[in-house]
Amino acid sequence: MRLATFNVNSIRRRMPQLLRFLDRHAPDLVVLQELKCRSEEFPAMELSAAGYAVHALGQGGGRNGVAVLARGGFDLLAEALPGEAEDTEARFLAVGWRGLTVAGIYLPNGNSGGEAGLAYKWRWMERLRLWTAAQLDAFRPLALLGDFNVAPTEADLAPGALAPTDALVHPESRARFRALMHLGLTDALLALHPDHPPFTYWDYGAAFEENRGLRIDHALLSAELAERLTRAEVDTAARAEESPSDHAPVWIELSE
Image 1: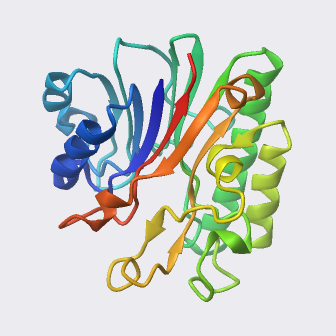
Image 2 (image 1 turned 90 degrees about the horizontal axis):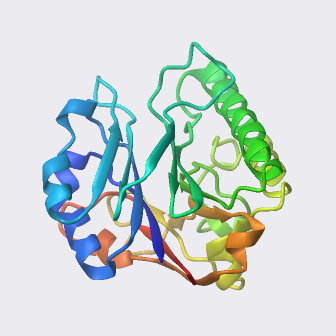
Image 3 (image 1 turned 30 degrees about the horizontal axis):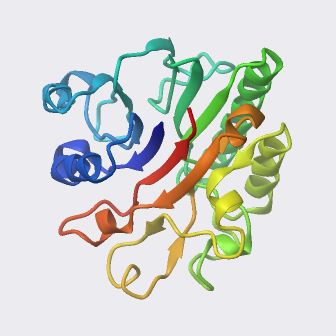
């Protein structure tokens, strides 16, 4: 089975790119981030015609938004990450699918809103760690897929791509990512590309052509799923297209 994550940076602008990606790789489940539309504006009918059951959690104001697409349907488990009732940003979906628990996440960037924005990012990461720990304690096969807005190590960004104070490489952001991984998760891309983990994001302009990228989109797997991992790739063809997202899709393959 194939699972994928794609930050589309506006679903209504990137539908052609998304449909071509689905045609190229035929993933069985895809999580999307940064829809930039309300739930009712999500183009579900086009994706249904492509063979996918869909659940979208949008947000007004052209911000955030996450979705799950899957062949064969799924059970919706959660539309919000527990732990902060006043947090209404559309950043998290969890579903049950083919015996797996799959969470699609759009982790806060942390570079806007000053100290409050950074604090929100770190609280969100701790909430994700606690939720993940609960799933693992219940022995649920778990996949966390999405835009984590964290480049875990210096190998995960081109030299000079970000200032050392950027929230994506801040020591505290990296420490909280390590704390999540220390629960026993496997980073799929790193596991299969240990020497040169591929970038997943390039800013607009010349960054893609010059490969000044970041690795901030991740597929993290519980031990049961890590044992079934056979492939993990970044579809750079999507980033090379006309009017692309600034992210490329990440897809992984698990044995049945």
